[in-house]
Length: 83
Image (cartoon, rainbow, N blue to C red; front, side, top):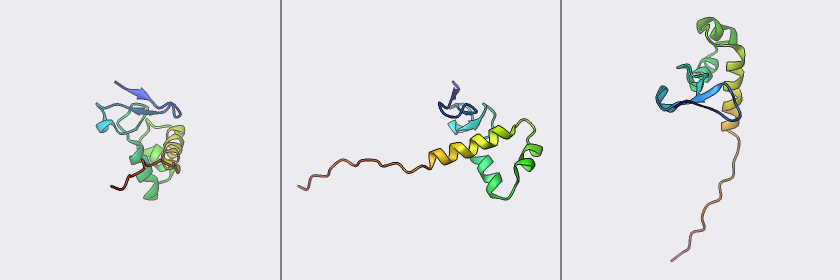
């Protein structure tokens, strides 16, 4: 069962594809792969040439999704009772 992310309409999750990792539009292209390509020095144009099924907005949403996932969140810890 594929679901679309509620904030990023091009990011999909499906436990039957890529081990449930966030992917681009149901394709077997994980967001993490896009980020790896960019961090290795590939340009957006290089990625689009190599994977013609991708669109520029896919890459921008992958970046936005990564930024959203890395936002600082405060998680309250349950108080520990010394005993």
